[in-house]
Length: 481
Ligand SMILES: Cc1ncc(C[n+]2csc(CCOP(=O)(O)OP(=O)(O)O)c2C)c(N)n1
Ligand SMILES: [Mg+2]
Image (cartoon, protein in one colour):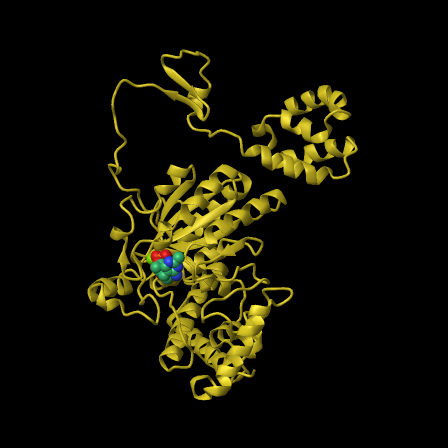
């Protein structure tokens, strides 16, 4: 910063009339400029220069020049003064050492990346663990959050089986990833979910009634019944609406993260996705984009072993997802996704790094999809029942966390059964209310995209209404026109 000020003092007066602020900023080394604290210095200088759009032009200039910065790989080589062209290739992307050895990089590491966990199978804290302290109040809130999620899964799943809602998809086995990651974030962090993360929205305060309204697609649903059940979204909770099209949310999160950085917010974007989503081009583009633009985004991959009926062995040949981070220059960690305390600690640390260091972080959470993919699937057709049973019983994240809070004296069997039954009652009530609320009118299907509805949509609306009139038996009678 001292260099910045000295350079500025000498050159600013000279350049003031000729180039304006943009020119001055571009002369400076990007590494000096892009630390968080540097913005506060650059802005007043710009104002002194009499630039009315100072804040705006600084932001635009700072972030656009950053694109051309080279990678930081091998700092040691960069510090070597010896310009021996026979030993080192001074490549535009950074210096590279020559070698006479013809050595291919192995396709697999000698040891698979280890998995960070802090609670053992019996819910005991592993001695020497690197863990972030959790208070009794937060731990109990996390546990009860997981119970609420289980209750939602049980009752909505039953409602689908009874034909009361058209579709559902559970998070069974992935409760810890849902709740513990949400607990480590703040409301200013923008969430870009896939579809198996309703627990994040639940943690943020979306009510049981709001969940039920969406699943029943009634008039109170924010999407006006235009999406299938479980496609939640809430502006108020900074939770972007779910899109079933796999992986589309991942680049969106990077763009949002970049915007948060430009606005100098102390917040990050967080995106969730499954192992299957990593086969989409969007995943790769997003990681690369985030690394180059140094966007404060946390990528949380729920590697649950399956993408509907496709096992991970048919999905990728790398050591899972965590190793992709290094390929793109993204710091990464593999975590036991069934250990709520480890997930909480990893996300809290990731958030701090993402925001204060302006960098993306990739977290691969190893877990298992205990339920069927959705109510349209029967997973016993393609995977052994004992595999499901083992994960359901021996590796259940909720009972592991319960053992830990009970061993701390923070929870009891009595508290457990009374909480579960009161949750069940509240949700049953919400379901009954949601079911009775009127459906949105058919006309709503054709609004909210265009400012002025185009003629082809008018035609489609007319045609649909005529068809309903001619074939009333094929359409629900409780939907107003
Ligand atoms: C672009 C796209 N391709 C295919 C599908 C069909 N599809 C829906 S879910 C899914 C599996 C996704 O698996 P994963 O990302 O591992 O998430 P999980 O369901 O295991 O949580 C597929 C292939 C889709 N919705 N979108
Ligand atoms: Mg999966």
